[in-house]
Length: 311
Image (cartoon, rainbow, N blue to C red):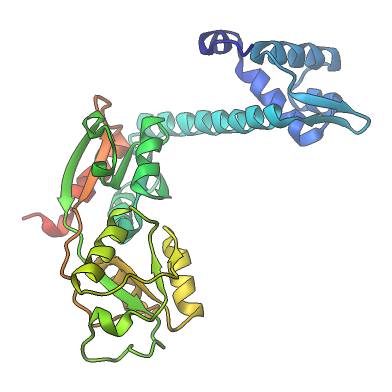
């Protein structure tokens, strides 16, 4: 029987987590013991205490040494996450004590990447020792990471959540959409296009039931056209650009900000196709009741009130 969370928390020590990581790296008690400054008998006792804490063996004893089993691999993965979080904690404390902003973890959906990177560039120009972690994912995944405390804030949409009331959110930018393609696409220099012109081309789109995908499906429905059957589905901006570069006949629906960024560097071209539907605005989302850290405050200010929009 797996012990309760309270039991695990009360019995587990950081040095034990270091031992687990060292065991994974060395595959032997002797090597791991040396790394964490324990004797071999001390490491053996510590491993027994760890396995007792979790209520199950974590390693298989083989003639090659110790190999983590399925549960052991999971525990080691989380041990590494905890170690990383502690490093981030130390980094943030140092930053705050020095008055340099510390560290912030922020998530974003693909369409808001250019907006976020502009804000980050502005903030770190004035706070050069500030650290920023950027996670690009779907709204659902970003909200899940907010719930778990892995992110300080996220640019996404709470409307996809069954519990939007759990978050503090502010709608701060309207999203407009565009269709992009390789600069070698057959319609790269067309004067004007309709969806009918693109119905037989391969589309790179978000997964089913995601806001941007639903919007595109509605565009095809209102145009009286069958939605394309053979799709390429991704939430990755880089995968989208790579697919368009490798396949000059592909097209993709993205935010206008992403389209303008890509066109500005000649990665892609924006096709002359009007998108009538409007996407929901971006929301800047954080956990309700959790105050911003100094670094998060700086980034929030840059996002909601960028210098170019101030009088």
